Image (cartoon, rainbow over all chains, first blue to last red; front, side, top):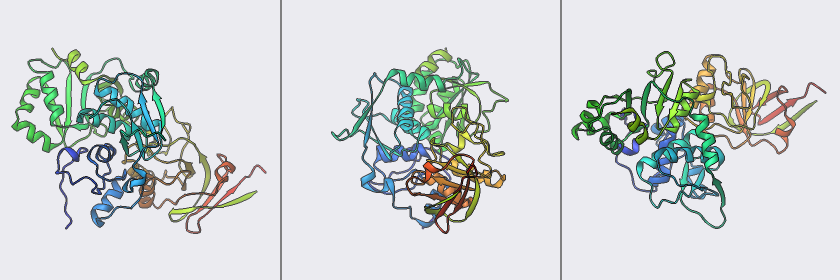
Amino acid sequence: MLGTTTSFTCVPYEIFDIPEKGTAVSFAESNAAVFSNSILGLLTNRESALSALASSITGKSPYSNLLMDKFRHAKVTVKPDYELATELDYGLLGYFAGNTVRDNCIGINAGEEKLDTIKAKALSAAIGTSGSCGMFTKEEGTKQEVISCGKEEVFTIKDELNTAEDGDLIALGSPQLGLNELRLLAALIEGKRLKKRCIIFCARAIHTQAEHLGLIDRIEHAGGEFMCDSCTCLTPLITQADFDSVITNSVKAAYYLNHSNRIGVCLKDLKTIMKECAD
Amino acid sequence: MKTCFKCRKIVGGYGIGNALLTEERINFLSMLDTEKGLIEDPHHQLFGSSVKGAVLVFPGAIGSSVGAYVIYSLKVNGAAPAAIISTNKADITTASGCAISNIPLVDKLDTGSILAMRSGMEVKVDADSKIVCVTNRTF
């Protein structure tokens, strides 16, 4: 049976019941495709909005690339030679990896046994932004080529994306924030007041849950504004006419705000943003 | 001098235009101006060039899947390429964008064919006949 649910989200994996590992799905949004292949064990190519729509009508998806097991193993592993701490570090690593490796699947050896969702989202979104790769794995076999990612490489990427020293607006949620990110944000600004306008992009389903949990009140009390059913990178609300520059922790948002919206971006991790912009 | 190569059809049709070649991949959402077809990313090899009416020869799309809609916008605005040749296996963003826009798309050209092409040469893409012909007018 065909049907639609108007979820208006780029993080379906945080909203819907996830099918069993090994189930084929058809996800267009690049961060969702990378996250689902890499973390959830679902099978999807990086579909375009149109091919995913075709899948929704036909119930089928072309049996190619990441739907086939032989393409789901990394030939090249990217290994950072520095300590990764924040979600921004993972975003920058993902941007490097996606830009450097052109295979379907990239190995990422960042030292951590299990990535938390926030870091995995940042990594997935950045891989989706800079390249065409649809999956990362931890595997590091003997046959793999290892590419080292040094501080200098990451500094160059950050320098390219970080085009402003400060911003008039804080934009969070590219990908849209999930419950755990809203929890973290609420804790970071508890009892404080944001000194700048802060727009938080999240799915309506997440907003509703967060409301029940009291998170929305806590964040709004500190001055945060919510924008549901929308996207940091594609919203018509963040334009040159209204803002010179934006502060964000998202490498994906930084890339598209710089390139498509032509707005300066100040790129910092969430804790630093909240430390500097709320008191 | 005219040289023809075999290729694989992804989206059918016939297109003719001057080759616009790059070894760099394209993020259609962030790099293209959909009104004029200009490549606006100063870091890209094709910065300042227009895809309008050209035969775009490139390795494939990167980044947002919204790129497929960007290809469609180019078509609606009359700024689309006459045809696209993918030097790698064609990617889904480019393929679906071309499919709804009726832009001929081919890949898997014979070895050596890309080496024979230079930007500005006239290229005919006959996707239905699986043939790409290059005319070098400087000879």
